[in-house]
Length: 249
Length: 60
Image (tube, each protein chain N blue to C red):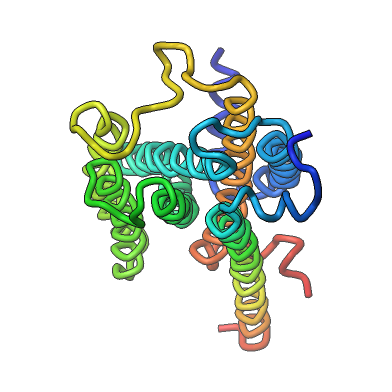
């Protein structure tokens, strides 16, 4: 038990995590490609046409996974930021900073694909509906976190300020999730729920899950690459950075 | 088979703009982020190499 704890904490230093992250990245890229290809295959060639929305419903295979990832990544980002604040571990805060841009991208893609779905089905690109508005706030929280960190020169202070913003913003995630229940919204209710069987064809569900897995693996790979870049930028004066094989021209 | 011909596939039952607009922008975003990530890494390495070279030239 104690052995295992020591082994885990060994990787909480940037010096130890840097090579590990480098080794893990190609595996997550490979998984992302694998899930992405099968997910797209199911999305376009296996899932049947929808009775009401025709082929237009296929936007679901990018919209729902992107929305899930935007919320999930926010929680993970806030958790890392919280660890960094509580235990003063450099790596945790770097992980939070590494996740933020990818999370913002998925929040944007959720809104973008939602607008392109809303236009043909609802007749409008945008409404100030609870679900849409709270997802827009999620995008602003990500952008606020990135901007706040960028505005503070001292990285340790930037980590702390960002962590507080990220933690306060977590309240928005359950608001997004439950918005379709709490308010009478234009946005439809959840198609997939933890508590009841999904209200959709099995193959559609599989397409969504595979695409969500692809985005998930992609996000891990992107965060690992970014956290390595952040380590190089921040730990530039540390001896271990100078000794890296990459630094030999 | 859902699609009779490649043209039918591209048409997406009249929703081509919306479906391909969603998938296309998503694919573009993932590719752009990948390029930016690679650039951020190479920029950091180039900058560090320069610093290390400068330090070894003028030892203080």
